[in-house]
Image 1 (cartoon, rainbow, N blue to C red):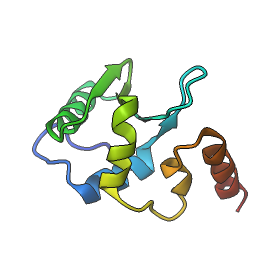
Image 2: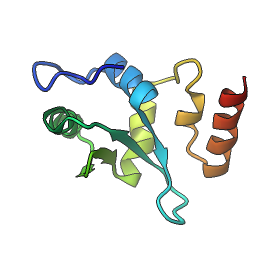
Image 3: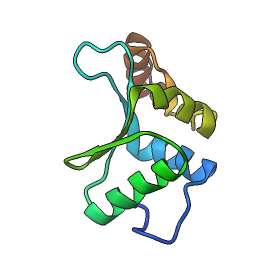
Length: 110
């Protein structure tokens, strides 16, 4: 999926849903039992624009290296806001660490 433009757009629910399905995912840093939503965005201007759009929607955002992430306590509400997973990306909506890995393996096998 192409990166979003650096400016001139708003983060709507349909845009966020597709963006997360294509370029996002969950990670469990260290031995955390809570996931956070993370995107890798290599373009500095686009990364800043995406982080700003998430902040404007009221989300706590972290930015480092080429990554944008939501705080742990923001991830589940973000997933609820964007709605049902797109086909084939269901594992990206599964907030249980073991369940997410199992679902991702099921997608890769089929």
